[in-house]
Image (tube, rainbow over all chains, first blue to last red; front, side, top):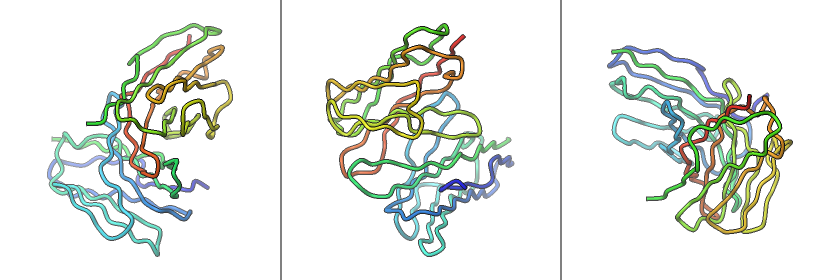
Length: 110
Length: 112
């Protein structure tokens, strides 16, 4: 069993829809990360959170430590949000190692 | 802004060739990582380094080696490339004690 599980694997939405991507993990963590990878490869960090909720523009990330679950929400989705969204967890320590989920491929149609 | 630069975006090599993938970061980060990314498998850690001349195996080190002679540069070496090493390779770096990793743009390697 993977230590970080994401769902769904693939998601197609119409422009304007509210989108939720889920992440569950089975290990102890110091923080959870949401990353975005656009076609072409580059990965950027969207959020790092260890409790509660964070918001940046139309993106909202929440985490429930007791349930070992996090969600990434996109409000008023747009075709430019089409990307792979990756959940990763870090267990602390100075080396910064991450354990990655397999990613959710999001396609937003106009 | 942190910049992590990978030497090539696309690379085509022949089976048996020695391949060097270079990664340079400009923010004095202690930790550097090499990953490969394959459809359905996600990102898998090949090697990481937490200091100059230090290296640790990740989850899939077989067939790879690394070199870190200077703090800013971390090289991934395929001693004898094989077709199953065709993949997207991503480099990342982070400060010691910090978890946010900064990624390069990736190198898409094809081994024919």
